[in-house]
Image 1 (cartoon, one colour):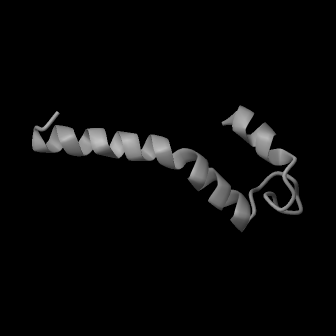
Image 2: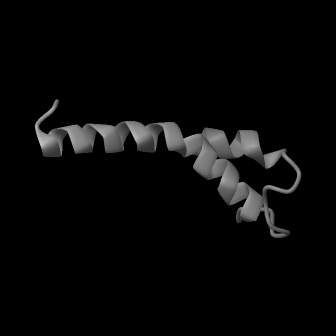
Length: 53
């Protein structure tokens, strides 16, 4: 997460005025960045639950 935060830090509008907390757009960027991993984990959990793994 640290490396991703460093990449996003220079992007205007992704952080609040305090320079630390994400803005609404920052939270959207985090969600977009994490979605592929979440989708993969959810698919694996669904397969395990239904025995289709």
